[in-house]
Length: 244
Image (tube, rainbow, N blue to C red):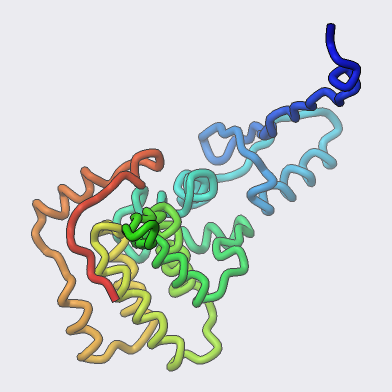
C-alpha cells in the first residue's frame, strides 16, 4: 500500500516542447516557411498585408537579393554565409545591405571587443585537474559566426576612432587569417579583403598578413571539401594554428 506521504506528493509537470511557428510566404519565385519573429521587416510586412486584406491571401513579396543566404545565416548561424557565397567582396556588401533591409541585427548589440572575444572561443583551452591537464574544447561554430560579425562590422559598421579601432580590427583580422584550422579560406580571404578596403593598410601590416596567405589551389580546394556541416564542425581538427 502506498504511503500517505507519497500520495500527497505533487505530480511532476512536464512542460511541452517549444513549438516554432512558421508562416508561409513567397519571396520572388520561391516559397518559404519562415519564423517571422527573427526577421523584423518581414514580420512588419506580414502584419501590414494581413490587416490590408479583406480576405485571407498568401503572402507574396518581390525578390530580395541573396535572401536564401541571409535566411540560412539567420536560421543556422552566420558562418553559413561564408559557405554560401564565393569570397567576393561585392556579393558580401550586397548581403550586408540585405540584412539591413530586413532589419536583422547581425551583431546583436555586441561591441568590437566582444566579437573579438568570440573569435577566440574556437581555441582549445586546458584546465589542471588532479595533476593532469584536461582539454576544454573550443567552440568553432561560435568563432566562425563571430568571423562573419567581424566582416559585417568592417563592411557596414561605424567606428568612433578609425585610427585606434583600425589597429584593433587589424589584430582581429590577423587572428582570423592565422587560424586556418578554425577559419576556412573563403572566410580568411574575404575578411582580409574587407579590412584592406575599409582601412589604410601599412606595408608592415600587409607583410604580416602575407605570412599566412595560402595560394596552393589544390589545398584550398581540399579546405572547401573539408568545410563541414553544423553537426560535424566541432569535431577535433589537427594542425598548427598560430597562437598568441
